[in-house]
Length: 241
Image (cartoon, rainbow, N blue to C red; front, side, top):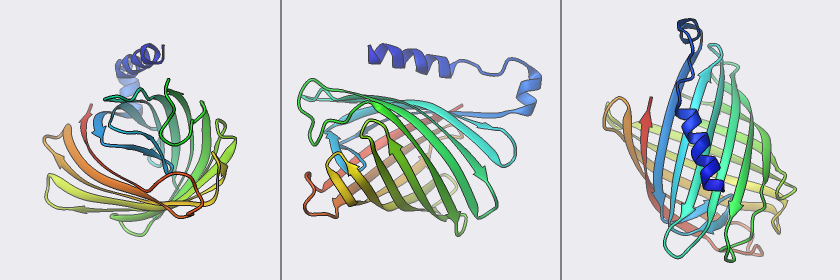
């Protein structure tokens, strides 16, 4: 059922959204489709699956020069012996207050499915709502603080992360994301949660097609927490419309 509903949503998002030349002139729309593979799926410091394929489609609408609305759908399925599935719908609204400050609101809904015991804990279906703010120290480096309430866990999750990029050529750039997270009675964890990072290299095959290999990991900061430190690698294939 989840797979059928998600397929319909993805098809709907791929359909043309402009109905007239007037709409095209007033609304800037960009669509990106991503498919990928990762050796392990780690979400908020919890290992939910091993080898995983994921698919995402996202549309960004520029409401004006400083306000942007993103909507999309995401689906992940475990390969091999696992049977984990996750489907998600998400949206976020960003306001560029200045060249240095961006603030935003986000909302998503996650549906989890598995018939065998999960690798860490069993996540509950639910909505995730929150707010975030990013300070851009330069065009290549920023820091983001976010706080989110997960209705499935009935608990809060927060993080502070940095994002750095560096162009290597006209067609490639390297990106590094690092962060720490804090939770409040989130699936048995409370307080400081994990430190995480992801290093990726993006190569633009053309103006509309890119490929991104990446490696990442999560280290638990409270030794009393259930679970293990995680490391993973993978690759994304991106197409922009």
